[in-house]
Image (cartoon, rainbow, N blue to C red):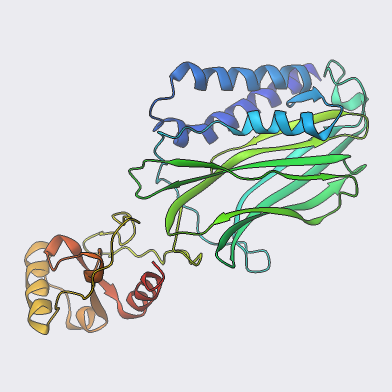
Length: 329
């Protein structure tokens, strides 16, 4: 049992390290010892109680614990652009942006000395979804399953991190906590929200449950992948040209100012672009060009020019999606 427990602890620590890897490797202004301290703390917490086990008499103390655990981000950080999530696994049309599993001990000891096999436990799975509602981004907390006695209370703290470009800087927004005492069941438990705007963002935080006899389990929500949404919550329809490998999303800056009118773009400009593209990347078939429009990565109406570096070929249906997205930039 002890060997099994140690192996599981090491697996948990490895998972935390992997979750922090992409986020931590680009942290600016956060010293390495803080990251090491966080990992070491998680290891000790697992060793003593298999998860972050503390005693909590009220949901107020749980909220304080969850709030502390959630703040692993820093205003000077740069979000990593690796491994963007696709908008898959929708719940009622809402994209899942994070999910997790937690085990709540239903005993009064709270010191974690006893093995988990000796005390009743409740297994919980949950996920976060995000949607746009009436001018606001809303983050929903769902309980997917409860195996065992329902917990006495839950507290969720969300850090909604935004940045104007993938180079930062990050603005960390601590949202109002999602809390509930008693009557916990599967389904939508609650939500928290903030004013919507065009931005790159990711989500981090912490989730805490209290067992029926006062033992609390608090775990961090590792920073999610990054999303780019416009002011009405539409996810950017990312497109990469297979020839030039140019990406339509990565160079976007969400602080561009709209001009009174767009600079001109003519058939001659398109001809010049195709000629330069062919000289740079090789000749493409007539079908290649007939099925594509020339996209301005920074739109002309937002200060973009007809410079070759600001242009890329995009399949016509995809280009229409990008244009529609920018209508609500």
